[in-house]
Amino acid sequence: MRHWLLTYDLGTRLALYAPLVMLVFVLWLFLTHLTDPPSRKWTWKALLGIAVGMFLVQPYFALSWSPPEKYMGDVYRILYMHVPQLIMAMLALTINFGCSVAYLFKKSWATDSLAEATAEVGLYLGAVGITLGSLWAKPTWNTWWTWDPRLISAAVMMVIYAGYLTLRRFVEDPEKRATWSAVMGIIAGVDIPVLYFSVKWWRSIHQVQSNPSTVDDRMVVVLRWSYVAFAALTIVLIYQRFLAAQATRNREVALPEALPPDEGLPKAAGQGALP
Amino acid sequence: MARIAWIVLVLLAAGTSLLERAGILAFSGLGTVQAVLVALAVLAMLADAAANFSEVRRFGRTIRMVIQKDLQIEWRTRARLNGLVFFALATLLMFSFALGPDTAILRRNAGGYLWLGILFASVLSLGESFRIETENQCLDGLRLAPVDARAIFLGKALGNTFMLWILAIVITPVTIALYDVSVKEGVLKLFGVLLLGCFGISAPGTIYGAIASNARARDVLLPLLLFPVLIPSLLASVKATGLILEGDPMGQLGSWLGLLGAFNLLYWGLGFALFPRVIEDD
Amino acid sequence: MILAQMGHVVGGWEYVWAAYILTWAGMGLYGLSLYVRRSKEKS
Image (cartoon, rainbow over all chains, first blue to last red; front, side):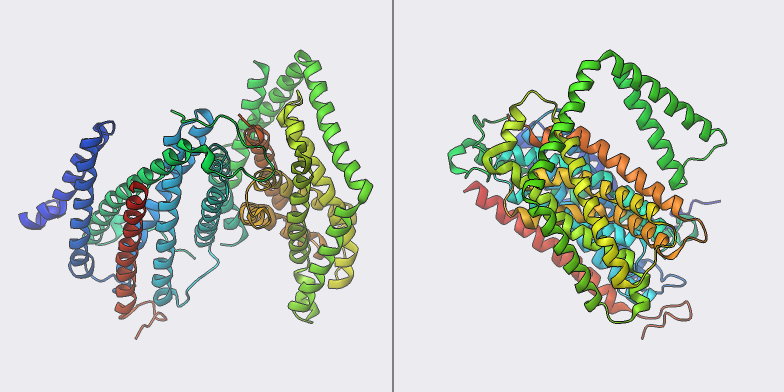
C-alpha cells in the first residue's frame, strides 16, 4: 500500500513540506537567539518572509488544488482561512492568560508587554476569524449568525478582550495598569471556559469538527499549510507588537513627570524601571 | 500547613464537581471521593482556624466593620438605595413599554427583565460603593490600616450583595404586578435565588469596581468590564427565576442553581485571591 | 445561486473571494498599523 503522499510527484511533495521544515528551522534560530538583538532582527524577518511566501502560494492550493467538498461545494474553502485564524487567536489569548498569571508572581515589564501584544493580536485575529465564519455561515446555513455556544463564546471573548484593551488605555500609571490588566486577564481567562459550558447548557449547530480521515487528503494538507502560514505570521505580529509595547513602557517609565496622576489616588511615588 | 491543605482540598472538590457537570469526568466512586474531600477540607479548616484563632477573629472583625461602615453611610442618607430602587423601577417600566403590550411575552420573560434591571442598577451601586472610598481618599486609610486586604474584599462584596438583595426584594412585587406573573414555587425560594444571583454579581463587581473607580471614565468602564464576565451568572439566575415564577415541572431548578453556585465559588475565590493586588500601592 | 436546502451547496465563490480579500486586506492594514506605530515610537 503506497502512502497517499507518494502518489504526488516530487515537486508537489517538496512544495508541501519544505516550508514546514524551513519554519521549524527559523523558529529554532529565533528562540535560541532571543537574547541576541542583531540575530533577532534577521530571524523575525526570515519568519515574515516564509509567512508571506506561504500566503502567496496558499490560494493556489486552497482554491484550485484541493477538490470541492461533498456537501459544501466550494464555499468550504473559507474554512482554510477561518479555522487557523481562530486557533491562532485562541493561542494568543492563552499566552495572555499565562502572562497575566506570571505577572502577579513576578513583576516584569516584558511580561506586561507580551500580555498587551497577545491581547491585541488575539483580538484582531479573533474578530476577523468570526467575520469569516459569518461569511461561511451565510451560504451554508443560510444565516449570518446563530445562537450556538461556540459563536457566542467567541463573540463574548472579543468583547472581553476589547474591554481589556480599553482598561489598559484608561489607566495612566504603568505599574497599576500592569497589575490591573493581569487581574483582569486572569478573570477573563477563567471566564471563557465557564461561559462556554454555560451557554452549551443553555442551548445546544456548530459544524461538527471534521475528522481528517473522513475528508480528502488534499484538504488536510492545505489546512496544515494554512496553519503553518498563520502560525508564522502570528508570531511575527505578536513579536512586533511586543517590541512596540516595550518601547512605550521604556518611554513611560523614564519620564514619570510626564504622566498625569490617576484620579482619586495620590501620585505613586518612586516609579522606576523594573527588570 | 493546614491552610494549604484545605485550600487544595476545596479546589479539588470544586474542580471535580465542575468537570463532572461538564461531562468530562465520570466514574462510580466520584460522589464518595468528593464527600471525603469536603470532609477533609472542613477538618483542615477547623484545624487552621484553631491554630490561628486570634487572626481569624481579627479577620472576622474587619469584615464586620467594613460592612457596618458601608451600611451606616448608606443608612444616613439612603441616597444610594433610593436611587437604585427608582432606577430599577424605571428600567422595568421601560422594558414593558419597549417590549410590547403582549402580556404572554412579558410574563414568559419576566425573570429576564427583572435580572436586567438588577444588573443595570448594580453598575450604579458598585460605582457608588467605591466612590465613597476614593472621595477623601478613604481607600488609602483602609489600606494603611493593619488589616488584611482580603477581609476588606469580603466586607465590601458582602455589603454590595446585601444592597443588591434588598433592591431585588423591593422590586419583586413591582415585577409581579407589571408582568403579571405569579410565584409558583414559593416566595422563599425566589428570595433565595435572588440572593445567590446577587452574590454572583457582587464578586466580580467588587473587583472591577475597585479597578474602574481608579481609572478614567469609570462609569463607562465598569459595565464594559463587568457584563461579559457575568453572562454565565445571568443565564443561570434568569433561568432559575423563570422556573420559580412559572413552575418547575421537570425539576431543572437544581442544575441551574448548581451552575450559579459553582460560578459564585469560583469568583468569590478569585476575588479573595486577587483583591489585595488590586488595591496595593507600592 | 446558492442552494443550501438540498444539502448540497452550489457556487458561492463571491463569499470565498470576500473572505480572502478581507483576510489579506486586514493583515496588510494591521501590519501597516504596527509598522507605523513602531516608527512613531522610534522617533
